[in-house]
Structure formats: structure tokens, C-alpha cells
Image (cartoon, rainbow, N blue to C red):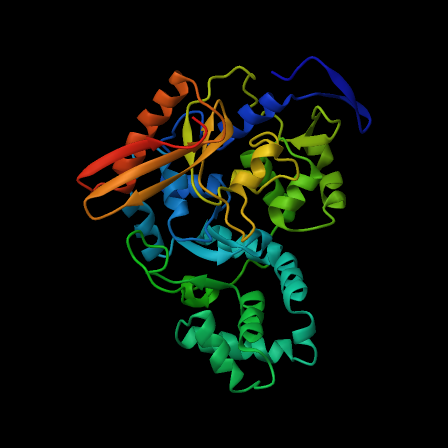
Length: 379
């Protein structure tokens, strides 16, 4: 239950939630206190979407959350067009259900357009965006193309503009999905794109609800501030929307006095709830979905996880918080899990990581004849 402390927030006294309480709420809602028996599709929709700049991270994200997850389960959903890879929150690639693709993309469109203007504002001057978008849609719906191919094809009609700029216009104004084999476990190759409408055989949602989207965010990530919601979605100016929702929400405060919103009855486990060792994938959404990330990672550890070239490293959790990074080095014959703690671990934590790490290697490198777990770094 929330701490008995309370402070003024809005017009009522709001219970104060400690960082550990927020951490346990997040782990519960993210299926990280215990693995769940939800189907893969149900889990993806429960998480709203899974960050997916690279092909394999969603597989690890699901493995650490689901009982008995196997790679073929997600690969099959991609091949059956029940889930897709598309630019969504923060204009980055996410794995999302087909239904959510059609509902969420129109809501996130302003953030994607803002990203385009921020990156290519000068290059867009004098360009007929509608004409370019129509030409690009026709090309990708005739045949899936890589961004490079698309830029070159459009460059024939708009030779005075950089092909990368032209391709980015299509990425912005045409909801492009990456078609298989991109995203299929064990496959490789460049991302090829077609429109979501052509791939799924349905139009974008005509009247999607931003309030429904934020309710789902709170169910998966709450309690959260308005700044958190804006960071997660990439959208700005959500204050009016959240104020309209206020009568349906519960309010809290964090230890810094920030107002947090949540769903009535949403789980809030005690701060001392046991949290098992867990391995998180690269780009895990939990590290990217808050203005204040202290509920999952300390400020001093962020530079060790977030690289200057935009990579968010694979991390592991001890007692619910990021305590280090990991990677798998694999050859045809062997696979080694390299665990690098940020600070020394006690014996119990090392044993817990080793036990969970053995399961991780069995999942990720089943074909390797030998598995090894190595701790490196601060220990």
C-alpha cells in the first residue's frame, strides 16, 4: 500500500510513493516479478508496444516476461501479420500488434512529423510533401523497398533533393511496416517496407483515442507524471488531455513532489516485495518511458547504459534496479554470457544471476555445444 505520508497535489492530499514503491509497481505491471502465462500477442498488447530498433531485442523482452516463450511464437505472429514493426513512440521502431498499429500510429503522427522537421527542416523547403508521399506510397505498395532504394527511386523525380530526405518523408507520412524476414529470429537482411494499410488490409483508425492510449500507458508503466507520458509517447502538450481525464484517475506524489497519475485499483505492491534477478533486452521500454528514470536506474549508471551513438545496452536487474550490463558472445561451438556489474555483487546475487543466465543461454544459444557464464568488471 502507498506510504501514509501525503502532501498537497491539486486540490486533495496525495499519498507519497517512494522510489521503491514505484519500482515494484513497474515490475508488477511489466511482468517482471513473476513470468506470466499470457499469450505472446496478449503480452505485446499489455506492454502497448515493445522497443525494436534491432531485430532480436523483442525476443529477449518477451522471454524474460513469459512462461515457456520460444522464438517461433513471435516469428509466427510476424509472418501471419498479427504483429508488425513500425515507427511509433518517439519516432522509433516498435513491435506492436496489428490492431494497435492501426490505432496508435495516427495518435503518434505529430511526434513523427516533428522529428522529421527537426532533422530535415532546411532540406524540406520547396518540396511538395503531399506529392512525394503519394509517389512513395505507390512505390512501396507495388513492392517493398529499403529506405536506400526508396530514396534513389524518388530521386529520379526530385533530383534536387537528397535521397535520404525523400525516404524520410515517406517514413513520416506513410506508415511503413518492415516486412519479414526482417524481425524473424535467425534471419538477416535490410529492412524492407510497405504501407501498414497494404500489409494489414485495413485503414488507419478513423477516430483513435489519445485518452485510451494514456490509460494503457498507465496500466503498463504507471503511476506516472505528465512529463513521463510525454517522454514515452514523444507527444507534447498533454496537460489538457490529462486534466480532462483527472476525474477517472487516482493521484499520488513522488518523493520529489511531482504529481503522478494512475488507474484506480492498479497494482501497487509493497516496497519490500521480493524482485528476482532479470535480464532486460537492449532498448527496453522501461528505460525510455520516463522523464524521471530513478524508479528503474540511478542517475550515475545512466551513462554506462545509454551510449553516445544511441544504443541502450542490455541490462540486468538486481532487487528491481539496473545493476549492470550483459552480452552474449557466440560461435558455432560455444556461447558465453558476459555479465558486467557496475558495482560488486554479493554471493547471493551472483548465484541468482548465474541461474537466470543459464536459462537465458539455453534460450538464445540452444544450438551451441557449450555454455559459459563469466562475470567481468567491478568484481
